[in-house]
Image 1 (cartoon, rainbow, N blue to C red):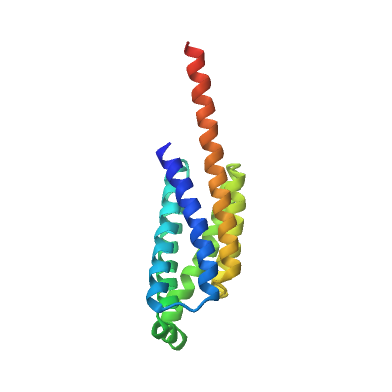
Image 2 (image 1 turned 60 degrees about the horizontal axis):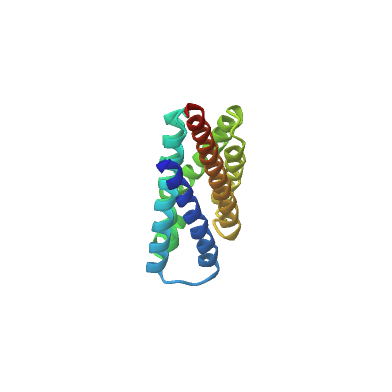
Length: 184
């Protein structure tokens, strides 16, 4: 129950941060504010998926681990690209830096496809739709459209995750209440 509550809390906070990310992309903030915001965003995103994958006990750890490592690398790149104009110029002029930014985004597309297949085969349809939206976000990231559209899609993804967790939480509560009434 504690993990489910954590997932729901992180999903709701992730939704709020994505709405903030939507605002950040249309305003001109200082580099330090961008650094703080994107760092908090990255921490919440990683924690959300760590808790979600730890809740899904049958899921192969290699899939969840690879996805989380990819998310961490992408978020490091996002933090550096959004908060440092110098790093942004460096990425534009260096092939190695471009590879550091681009390859994890390609891996993210692949991992979202793998997650979609896994959730579909296991009939976890809310997470299946969330992972389909993850493919859209990964493609937008790869095309360097990490702006308003991706924030809206990530918000919908987080809603699917929150609804899935809430639904499973309510099912567990109902099953426990029914089990207690049978014993009396």
